[in-house]
Image (cartoon, rainbow, N blue to C red; front, side):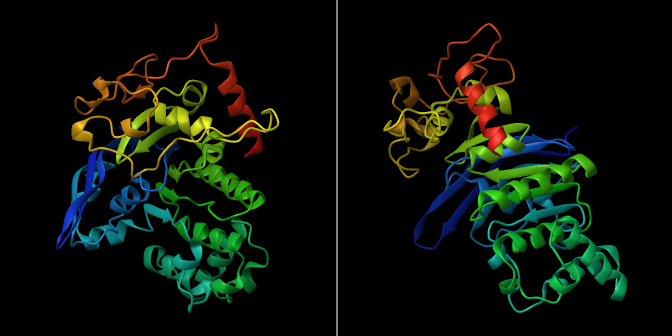
Length: 346
């Protein structure tokens, strides 16, 4: 049994005088202990709201949540507020996207870290402060004892993100959700943050759900990748098969729009045309059809299902999947080379 099994998760927002908006339209995926699973897609595809639902952080009014999210045999979506509060921090933890807005600006870093130790590990006074300093040192913050007395605005962006990670791993959670943890950080700090997350998974056996739009992060970290579009998983595969032969036109477009260092001088980029707003309802067909260069009328005859069009275990929600010229070793050499370059860079 996977540590976390999400089955047909749906999230709908409703407001007085406005039509309902379905942000997540039936997302399913599993996360095993010691595994890194990626949720990938453009802004607005439902990645972050999925994580907030799993952590019980969505508002109770104006939001309807359906499906299941079984964590170690318990449905997180049906737990009481008090029970979720006990799980958050101790067994479930989350690294938020913007550390400056996630940390309390008028409370020293040390107080915010020790608060978790007091709540979930029963530590107080000097032992709690020493453990907080140890956590900051573990995530690579220099002079951790002094940093405990500082406020978030006195730390750099990278240090604030490290402080958030220190808070998230304070109780060695079994499941860690990282929502765009490297956004707005320079590439050097990004690499250090990703290396830190790798060590956490390897040493503690933590299950990591990585939410990102950065395919470089996916190439360097994730074991399994789920590509989301308009609230549904449109492609799911292990990392290397996905990069070697992306099957859904959306995943293929995401990889094709990445700038390449070995591209000829002056060669234009190949962006996906349109925007995330150019879509149709899944009930009417493939939501990506208005942006797809290879759609047919069959794409507009109801919701396509996840199938294995080419390779066992490589799922795609498409009736007209991308075809690749497969070599004798079973892979597309061009994209596999891209993956190796991306991994090296990350």
